[in-house]
Image 1 (cartoon, rainbow, N blue to C red):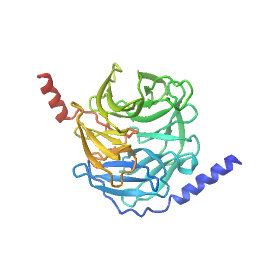
Image 2: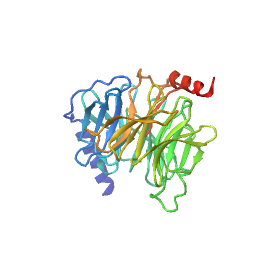
Image 3: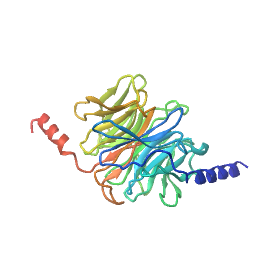
Image 4: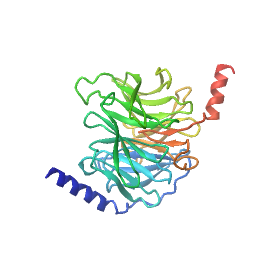
Length: 337
């Protein structure tokens, strides 16, 4: 009976996804910030102009209930991991021109999907926090789900990103979700074998992005303060970049200049953080941003699957293979080179 109820719920989701949101058509421009937000009245996806902070609703309501990680695929479509759709969560596609929401995958292995990234082949890489935690692959055309890895270091995975070699990097923090949780950790996963390698251990890693040097930019939900940290990809050493005082750093991404962008969930604002000084600036606040969660950035050029420009969110962010000249130059000046 439970299986039948679940099948009916998925069927209803697919039918309802054909409806079009009432939001106006939106043209995405390079550098635009795409933010998911969860509201007590109506969840949605918002575009933010990075220069003016102006907000435009792309889509709201309908299927969206608790959107978390988001990413932008090679066709410029917005891909969303929603925890609550149909009771067990779903992966949704949003057309920014029409606001139409479509179910890509629901049910199956998903009970609590959270983070999302897109690999070089265009496959969707999803974290699910249930059942001890796992990492899954979803075909964006058929919705077919396959297990990449479960268990091991993964107990409560949140954000995921893809590095320049196509490997998956997962932020995992079991604190408060499982018995005897141990420390949070950052885990690297082989995309072929699913083998897990511990990158670093400690803190409460939440969402992850990859900067131009290949290091990991992580939002950390500490016991007393929330912060953004850098974790060295080679040594696993952690460096504090910026403290989000009185707030909660949620999704994280890197823009084309190397600036760190994060969603401050508690204060309903989007912050820009200088990666060298940690100085914060408010890019946009309030308005439609009720409880902002995942964040993605429209790239300067939409990549074809297989190129080295990788999109993720959150859940993980924008991974750039070459270091931004702006920040690299500033770094050389600071070193006296």
